[in-house]
Length: 46
Image (tube, rainbow, N blue to C red; front, side, top):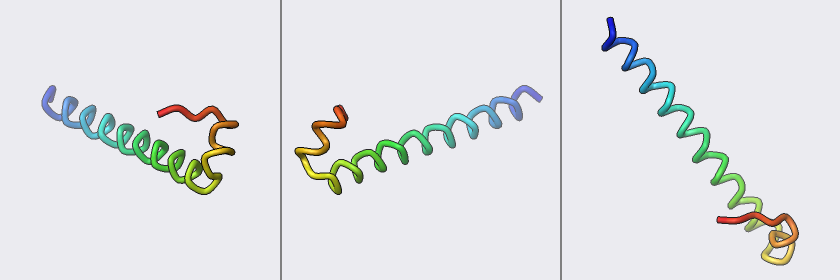
């Protein structure tokens, strides 16, 4: 029973991590589109 709960928790954390990574990719994509000057205005930090 505990193993199933651990497995479920692991899957949840993994999907959250994937969403987080996707958000970082989206921010980097926005940086590229806006160009360096505009990206600095947004104060995005790596």
